[in-house]
Every structure is written in structure tokens, then in C-alpha cells.
Image 1 (cartoon, rainbow, N blue to C red):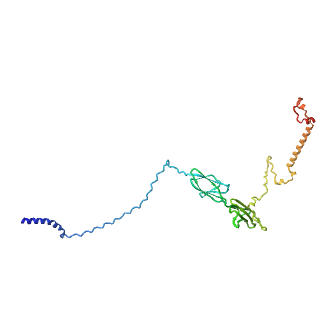
Image 2 (cartoon, one colour; image 1 turned 180 degrees about the vertical axis):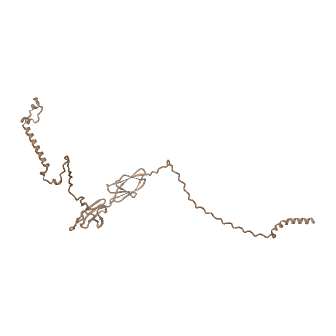
Image 3 (cartoon, one colour; image 1 turned 60 degrees about the horizontal axis):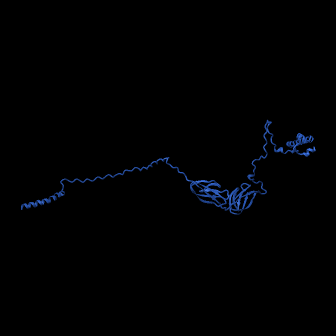
Length: 321
């Protein structure tokens, strides 16, 4: 009986022992508890300023090998523009750039398409796109269509004013005035002169030049003279030959001036020199004729040595002597 109780107590003690130990935390501690230490605030992290980013430096390009470098050669061709119809004064334009007057030699241009234009007053413009191949010559034949006439106006009086069909066109000289085909009145006038009126019939593709001759109005004291009528030199007398102090005896005689040429012809030395030459020639001829008629006539026997001649010229005349 006792043993059973002891065994039951031992079992209970075994079961209650962990619980007793677990309740040690509930007992009041003998020493006063220390105040809990407050955690120190962590210092704020300062962000370090980043230095400004450096710009990337481009690496130097490797030097090109001169032996491997291939030169860039521009591809070119030639452009030849021909103008038909014998038209003069036409101008050539290539890609809106004036080249010059036609006819012209072939032009060296870059390969590809180019705009060719030919212009001439009084004709419709010629415009065309022309392809030019590399190393080839592209030929273009231009034919212009006449649409109007071209008039130039001049005058013998400077600064004269020109009006065409009642519309003022400016002072002379005027060139390159384009007029439609038909009749037009051209008036050239200036103060102090009678106006010069002319009417012309204009045809397409033709050039005309109108020259006005202005006459001073009666009663005008003085009229302006055209510049073309002004003499360049006022001294109209010929220059006198220079006379040296000691002329050389071998120097040629001075040429005859206009003053000496006004003398009568019978007082000139070359007239009497000619008369003397004629008289001398006449005297010599008379003497020769006289000597020839007084001599002995020639005999064929004397000439041929008595053997007789094969032939005798003017035999009848020889026998008559």
C-alpha cells in the first residue's frame, strides 16, 4: 500500500517538475529591474555627391593607310548642245546656270540628268531634261520656235526719248525690245526737235533696227548736237614738216604740201622735166632715121659672101634701094 502511494507520488513529481520550473519567470525578481535602454537613433546616411560625369573622349581614329586608300574619282560625261536654223544670239543654260552663247563646244558635266535650257528674245524657251552617261557624250539638237520680233532704236541726237504705240520705253539707244507680230508706231522725240515717227510691220523671229534723224525746230537759237557729230580734233590743217638747222645734203626733199599744190601747172618742175624728156626722145629718133636712110643698102651677095642666101627677108624692099 505504501509502495503504491510512493509510486504515485513519484509519477506526479515527475509530471509536475517541468511546470514548476516554467513558473520561475512569474516570480518577482529580488533586485529592481534596470530601465530599459533606449536604442540610439541610427545616424542618417549621407549620400556622397557624385562627381560630374566626364564626357567620353572619342578615341582617335586610326590613321588611314595611304597604300590602301582609294581616291574618289568623280564620274563625268560630256554634253553637246547644237542649235539649228542659223539663229544668232541664243544663250545656253545648264541646271539654271548660264554657260554662254551658242554655238559652243561640248561641256564636261557630272554623270546623271541635267536640265538644258536655250533662250533667245523673240523665241519660245527650249527646256529639256538630258541624261548623261559616264564617259559618254550626250548630244541635244535645239529647234527654237519664233513667237515675236525684236526691235532696236537709235537716234542721231543723244538722250532722245522713245515711245512705242504710245507707251514710253526710255532714252536711246534701246535694244532687245520684244514686240508682237503686227504693225507698231515708234516715235523718237526730244525738246527742240521735230519728232521722228516711223511705223514698222513686225514679223515673228525677225530683228529690226530703227534709226531716227531729228531736225531742229525752226527758230531755235541753238540745238544740241549728237556726240557722233563732234570732231575729235579742232585743228584740221596738216602738220608742218620740221626744219633742221643744218640739213644733211643726203636728206630727201620735203614732200609737197597743199599750199604748193595750189600753184599753176606750168610752174611745176616735173612738167618741164617731162617736156624735156619728150623733146630729147624726138631728136634722137630723127637722127637715127636720117642716118638709116643715107647708108648703103645691104646686098645678099655681100651678106652671104657671094654664095647666095637661102632666103631674103623683105627682098622686094631690098631691090628697091
